[in-house]
Image (cartoon, rainbow, N blue to C red; front, side, top):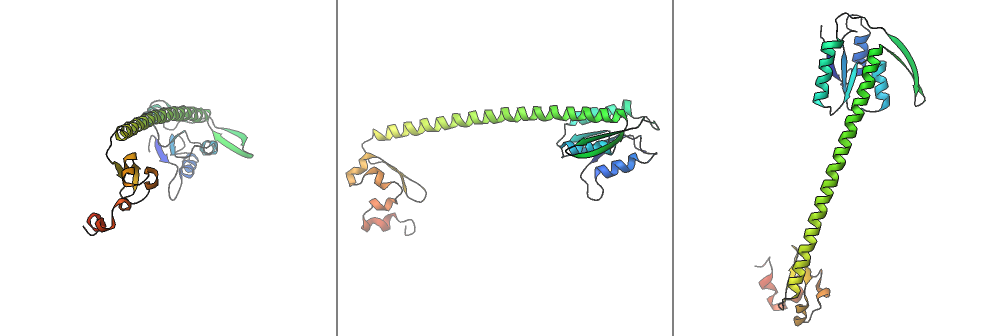
Length: 213
């Protein structure tokens, strides 16, 4: 006979709730503490765990230290083979639906404490995620500022050089031209987005053609 059962709620043939209900309805196994692991975290999921007399549950991804502490608790304090628990039936209503919980006061208390533990852990995780996001945004803004400063410095240097300077993308289109391009009879803004062959004499096009070269 196992001293403790840890089960996932989501299983193919019989889910964790059904398994728990079956074990708790059997007098030979009802004393065994059952911890349910679930990715569900709605209030109705907690109520369902209470209805099947689960002793505790953890939402996934769960904290390993928290799981170990619950295992130690059930093995050292709560689990006594053959122990008879005082069972009570509590009736309540949530979201317009009535529910009936048949469990010992200890089981109800354990689940309530579990809900509290999970809420604290999820809140801490939310605060940590928010802090990391703020730090990432700060780093991104810093990189953006550095990029803008670099671009400004580049344009400042380029604007002071009397030579014809331009920049093209991978497709060969102009992304930057400076005033010196006017020496060839073009206005800088008019060339943006056009192919660099625009400023090449027709007789030299073959010399600069990637395909033909």
